Amino acid sequence: MKDEIKEEKKDEKLERKKLKRRERAEKRQHKHMGISLRWFVTFLIIVLCAGIMLVYSLMSSRLYVQRYQEQLKKNVMAQAEYLKNNLLENHMTLDDPQDLNLRIEGVATTFYGRVLVINREYRVIKDTYGNHENAQIVNPDIMAVMRGQASEKISKKDGYLEYITAVKQEQDVQGVLVIQASTDSLNVIERRVERRNWLSFALIMAICIGAAWAIGNASSRGIKRINQQMEIAGEGQLETQIPVRGFKEFKQLTERYNATISKLMVIDSTRQEFVSNVSHELKTPITSMKVLADSLIQNESADLAMYKEFMTDIVDEIDRESKIITDLLTLVKMDKKSAAMNIEEIKINDLLEVILKRVTPIAKSRGIQITYESYRDVTAWVDEVKLSLALTNIIENAVKYNVDNGWVKVTLNADHRNFYVKVADSGVGIPDDCKEHVFERFYRVDKARSRDTGGTGLGLAITKSVIQMHKGSIKLYSESGEGTTFTIRIPMKSDASVDTARKEGDAE
Image 1: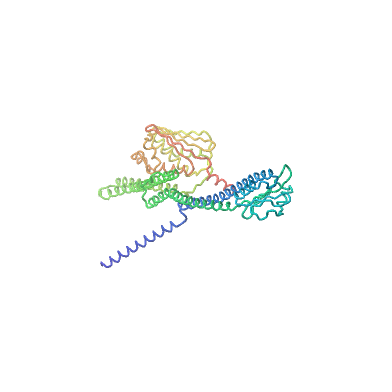
Image 2: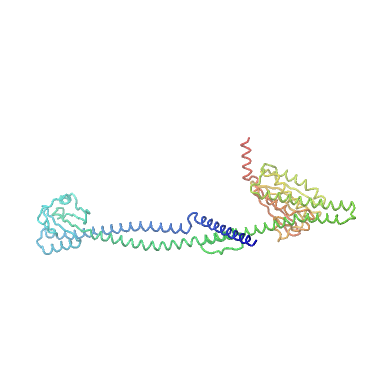
């Protein structure tokens, strides 16, 4: 026997372990579905930063090199003007070789390049390299400048920038000056700028990754907190509220979550109370019938009159039980979202007149006067059966909870959209602390009086459900001891009525 118990315990432990593994696997599978907000935000920020930095690096390198190249051109042209002035002063000769040669050599050294001075016979009178001095040079660009077809020529060739300009005396071309400036420094600067940009890119990307990680965590922290709380709430623990903190959006989400949880707690409490009330209401008539039956069984001397009296009481309790069950079934049908609505066009004036005819005998028995005022003919698209039930409940309550020899006034009015039914009475009224609860199921303002009148506490709950199904509203105005007024507003045409009218038109 002990071995069997041990085996059973082992089996139970194994089952619990399997269940836990299955739950963990489901959680892992759930977690792996999709990408998390934190990683999405982090990845997005990194990609954006990387793209922006790459574009900036390429553009800045190109702009910097272009700017340096433009500056090199300006410097070459400025030095060319300087040398041209000196050449004109010496009439394109090197009569003062010491001074002019030093200046030409200085310009060539400055640009790490070469300077050539060519006279009008295309003979090189100065070459800082010393390769072509006294030699004639034929070059299309030089010839174009010498002939006056162009005042200057500038071009970028492999390793140097070449600037060709005419040396003019007024409009007479005396010769040509050629300056070749090395662009090796430009390449060095370009590589230096690229290196600097890549270092900056690496540094900024490191900062962006850190910032992206921090922003991703901050953006998902609030959602993670709410998600954890929702898991707890999903297990049935609705008491814990989430502290409202963080960003504005997270605060709004937290407040809405807390409000939703509060409503769920109210609904859960209402459900428990409803079950308790249903149990109590259904049990009460049964208890009464059992007491009456036991009394008859124990009373051996009971005569026929006593039997009739007790059986009459039992029938009343059965009728009461039947009424409670009927009202409960009606309320359940009203609660269903898919509850069928038999919408049709009816005249509300006629509907109210029929209801008042049914209630008038009850009112006359207590001396209550019912008056009905209709300000206009009202035709609306409604569910006649359900609306009749709702209006009957309101008018019957006005009679039942009225004083003897009192009055009930029913009025009907309408505008271009809605019709209004107002039911006022001279009854006992409703206390302020009860007004918020009168539409709750099984709620009674005066329980003793309700039992005397045969009320189940479901009439106003059914009425409110019917009016809400018609997209309408009901308002209550009452003072304790001074009567009660219910005002009902219902659209004359709802979406359901329009669909019904369209179907009928299609059928025709």
